[in-house]
Length: 289
Length: 277
Image 1 (cartoon, each protein chain N blue to C red):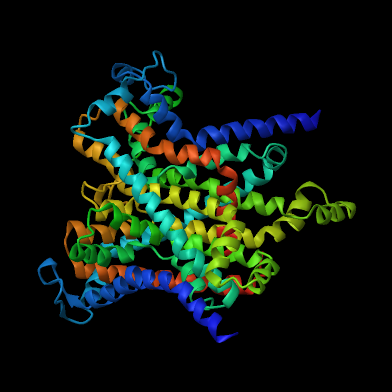
Image 2 (image 1 turned 90 degrees about the vertical axis):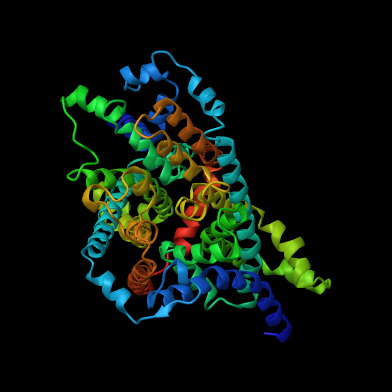
């Protein structure tokens, strides 16, 4: 590589690099410093180093672990349902999309709505007097549960998240299914494979990388859930719907404990590195799509 | 015979999926078209006497809840955020694809950044903004929206530029064009499709962003995703549901219309972003 083009290349990535240093690098350094300091709004420029007691405080807080458990469980359940539902729809509806590609636009619409607004919309839809869902449940079954009460909040939130983001799984898996070469399918059907066997033995293995990617992307997004949860229930009855993101937000804005909030942030960062490490390990072994 | 039966079943499933998945928007739209009195007596999806009163009411209450202010904030911050993301990512993606500069760290960083919950950076950014006076400004919000979108845009550009034919650029070099000229007059025009597709997606994601809008703004720069929730907080127990529904529909309309018009580009970007990442 000639010296000049190397220099030009550096010049071209310089603006982005500077931007990332200012808005990611610097905040990360602050995160690290504040997480080992006693700090409040009054000594924000001169934090007092105190070692790892903020981390110890976060790790000793049962609410922290409840939030971590909530996020993990929420992310896993939602991702599994979305992949299964998305895969089912993608394969079953494939003949419709093949003839009329625009039909998929109607199924992509939920992704265009802000999750925060979806949360607000459900305040209306689930409202016991004016909501459409309680109205029809009452009409058809004569009863409806307290959707946002302690017993039902988790199920309600899983349903809401699933309904909004199954379209993502559907979209990715549809394009992966459509990309399976007709030749392979034809060859397999000449060998006598039909229907379910054709799907299980030919399509499914070929779609496996896409299924894995979809699962991880959905898991990551749902694990850090904040918007719809915040606008619909907040931390919920007795903190029963506190996700990791909500926990950090509360520690900072409601409790004003900067050290604790930042230490929890760093623990979340460590957790996401573990997830990334697992993903990279898995995808490196698989053939690229 | 059996084939047409299966086909009918497919249509049935499709229609059911459209209704169930879009139910929040459908139900909110229906409510926004009912009068306040009807909302209290009729919670079904059938409107007895359709009216636009709620929409009129939203714009008439600008002194207490100024929706045009929130919509403008969202529009300005999202536009700046998406355009800035493109201007930062495009040259960087070119440098990675053609000179190999930064490919070993910038691209993995961008890809992995999408897996990191951004709330981790929210608190120090808040404290930084407080020090430099960027709290509650549209530009401050736009910078964050840019940060949210840069990873996706960079991944999309990097893969699309790598796919462009090298010969045209080489011909340009032979004719004496420098890198900057090539970038502006050759590479950018050939990448218009990706630029359009990724800017639409970046705009929608920016419009829908909530966490940073909530933390970094109080009123002057509050985006509509946050402003809409103010409406509920402001009205306390006695929410005017019809007006609230109209607010939510107005806040949702811009990305929804964009999504319908550009579903093909959005779909392609989302798929490429997922698979190339």
